[in-house]
Length: 396
Ligand code: HEM
Image (cartoon, rainbow, N blue to C red):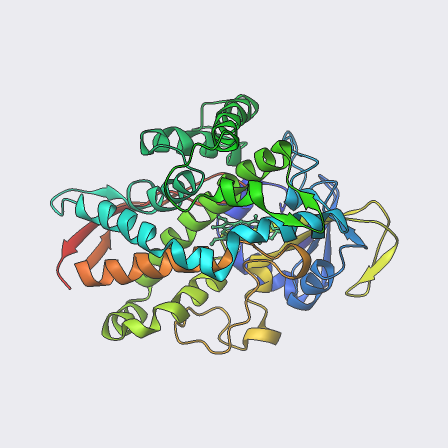
């Protein structure tokens, strides 16, 4: 029965939630989950309304669906957990590191990392696309942006996995322990930067340490919180955009052939990948007053989850073919990066990473095929791809 949709479980999101989303959109606009007590929003307009009203829907009390045994790692001064006016101050300062110019400067580094990954591929063997090919790009890039030596890249990935996959049985390290180790590591990087030790590259921490808006500067604690956010927010998300995106192409050979025949379609294909399998399954808010959403009264203090994957297939916005993967879709106003106040700060960077990745892929490999089952990550927020066994064939 629809009232029993197990929206509080990682298994629901890591399975195929789309048939349930479709039924939910056709039924009540707003759904109550009685197990861990929250409202679920599945319609595009309702999610945009909530995201655009931070005064009524706060991020400060948590942004994740409560899980039965889960803990939420809330860090009060972290950008993503703050509300206006503090959020606006922090965001203005941090935006200094994400201007179009700063993002464009990273293109060479991204190309270098992607080239390195593809150069090492041996087409006679099998790869886990998610772990071996997609994951290294965002992790290495963020580690590099923060000035970490490349010898530490693997360790970065390990910490990040442990923190995001709170309930995944395959991840062995305790998330709180991983967080503590990561904080210590970031503090070392920040101290080096404060001492004037430069990495000689686009140095995000140095830019942020120097940023000043209305006489305000970021403290060491702000930098620490932000470094942590960057790793968690920019890493798993981008990895899954690449993995799901490739899966969408493999499962839709006509669309794959179209993209091969016209590489100028890569940017619009990426928008469709973001819409079709939105890497972030949900973000949550807490109502600060009694308020009506989609005809439902939400009481002050109630938790509300915005299910982006459901909104991005809303027939009222994307039409009768909303359930189809169409790389030429236009317009494509998906909200995979969120909307309004907290809209993803790394959206342009993620798009650039994906563009360079698929451009290079299409010029180097003539085929890719799935050679085994996909294993998903147990998580309610970024229920990504853990195993995706593939074989590749060289050639354009
Ligand atoms: C495909 C890749 C990505 C997706 C789908 C994604 C998705 C999102 C979403 C949905 C939010 C909104 C949070 C909310 O409303 O509470 C968000 C926020 C954020 N994202 Fe991303 N993200 C991606 C990549 C990145 C990257 C590459 C970075 C940075 C390197 C990044 C940094 C951030 C930050 C800093 C925020 C917080 C913004 C704020 O609170 O004002 N993201 N992201």
